[in-house]
Image 1 (spheres, rainbow, N blue to C red):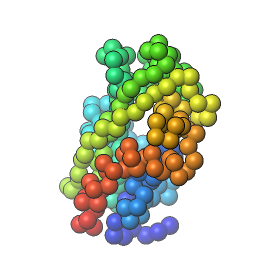
Image 2: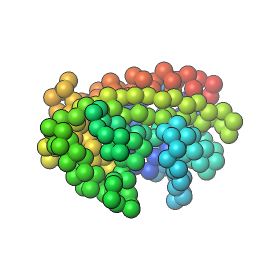
Image 3: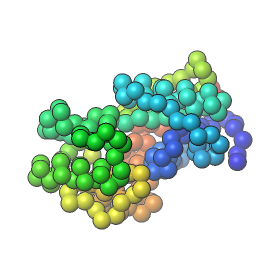
Image 4: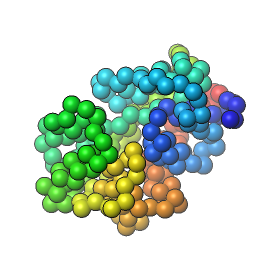
Length: 209
C-alpha cells in the first residue's frame, strides 16, 4: 500500500463501480487515489437522505475519523425531465416505491426500464452530485455538480455490477450504452460528464496538503 502523502485521497465508497467512476473522472489530476478496500474496517455510515451535500459531508466525516486520512466522498440524486414529482428518484435511486428494502441491481433496472418505456422509450434527465473533501475534522470543502444524461429503453444486455443504470444510459458521442463502453471510452465519458467539473475543485482542495 502506498503511504499517505502529498495529494493523496481515499475515495469513501464501498461500491467498486462508483470507485472506478471517480478514478476515471479524476484521471490525469496527479492525485493518488485509494479505495476503502485498502483498509480493514466494516462499519458503514448511516445516511439520512437530507441532501446530497449533507450526505457527502456525513460520509466524509465518518471515514476521516476512521482512517485519519484525507477523504473524498460523493452522494448522488437522479431526476428525470417531465416526470411527476412523486415518481422522481431523487436521493432514493435504490429505494423503489413499494419496496421496504434497498433494491437489487435487477430490481433497479426493471423499475427504471418500465418508467422510461412509459415515456416513449427515451427520457432526458440529470444526476446531481454532492462532493465533499475532508482534510481534517475542521477543514472540508463541498461542491455540487449537475451532470445531464439520456436514458433509453430497451436497455443494453450488458449490466455492470453495482451500477445497473449504466445499461439505460446512452452516450450520443460514442453511440453506446455506458455499460458497453471499453475502458478508453468509459474514461472519456466520465471525464466529460463529471471529471471536468470536479478536477479544479479537487486540485484546489488538496493543494494545502
